[in-house]
Length: 490
Image 1 (cartoon, rainbow, N blue to C red):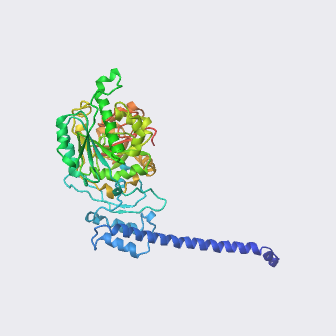
Image 2 (cartoon, rainbow, N blue to C red):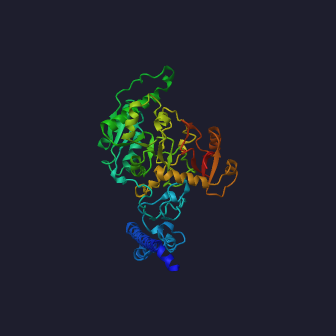
Image 3 (cartoon, rainbow, N blue to C red):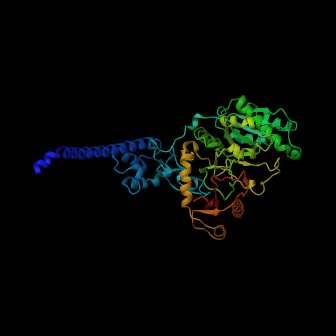
């Protein structure tokens, strides 16, 4: 009977044996291929990062490079915590201060406030905020992106842009121009064009004194703007500014054929890394269609309310005050440019179209013009306290792909959800003893109350709180990172 049973089911048994053997062969092949891939990836990391660092031959970083190059790493680099490699990496931290900043550093992983992607492994020392030390320790090791991982951005050095200075009747435009020329790395790559309205002779003479260091153009129509409603004549200055902006931007984009322009008003100081910042962020505007500008300004960037000159964010709010615009966006806006109040018009949903801007934690511009068309609105309460960055940060040597929407938004939502909730009263009356907290608000009026209590700007423009992203506003308060978060956020 057993022989008969075997003969009857011989093919079934043979097929099962073949499947068993074949399956094990496939598993063994995948195991070996995975180890080889890990080894090649580790070698590539060592070559790309360690050979580009100024590493002492006897340092632990050098030992780690040799270890990775010579040893077939058994621990997956994607699951380092607790592994042998992780222990070796941890021991290299003491050598961080002896090396140069690595290509692809990721400042956002040092502070949850920057809310970037965690797809890279970073070896880092915490940056000291002490003014006495006056130095920043750098992160030195990043894991390269795998195929199918987070998107990369184009090299910043492939881009250039024009600088447009909007001027009227301030001879003190020289203060702005002096800094632009001082910090400009290349006249050819960053030509400066000063567009003057108002026809003021003293201001014109100040601009012409720079010779061929700048290009001086003058808006030809100096009369009142036609079509202004009678009840708005007392706001004629705002209509003239809007007309000037349209004329000047038309000259830059449509006549001089620039692909991108950074607009600077004549009452702005600029930071030493102003050009570095815009050069590094320029590629983002081409790669991410959900971005439509880069701004150098943070409305809540007052002394004591900011920390970390490496921190960059996405924001739904258009702030201006030193900002970058591309030809593509200009072509979209130019045909419908408003008669007046151009900046509020930019914030309208019909123009913004749910797009965001990039902005810094610490401002790369600061206004010194209290007297103007706005009659010093907000100057005494906020603007004169704005901190201008004075320690340059190497943004062009930093991987800014965490700012792309596909990378930024998931981390933004996840990390906001992990931050503990506190009340305004607790923040005001005692130390929270927490590095990061969030305060929830239920309405615009609730936000305004909280913002005024904590010293941040409380107004809304087109329904958007200043510097907010998805309704969230971030700032420092008594040494704690605070997020004002709408109740619908996790």
